[in-house]
Length: 119
Image (cartoon, rainbow, N blue to C red; front, side, top):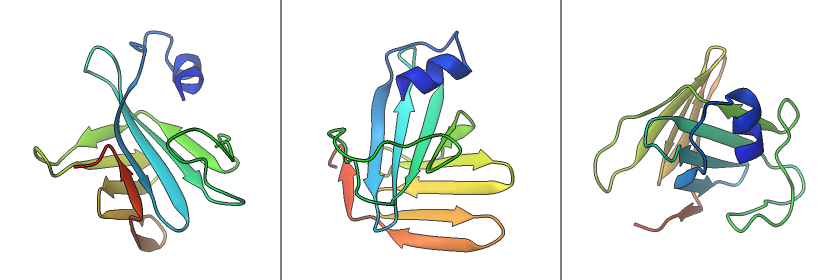
């Protein structure tokens, strides 16, 4: 993810710090914060073969293929109730420890099966 962020924004404050990772039956999402505490990033991955999981093993998200990396992310939760909203070309991705909601031409809501870090 850091390589993608660096190529998008050479001024991004690295390293990134994981704020939330979620996995559903069809997707996985990482929300990361830049080291200076200012920039939030969303990386989403559509499941095809197997999940990479938070440990990094398995399928790799590829931008424009099975992955999406965007910096248009806001935090709208509260302490202990993480909620992030990312937008990309008319689609909104709302990520929490319990649900992933993707709203665009169609809206889907998926239950989270795994989240890191744990509450």
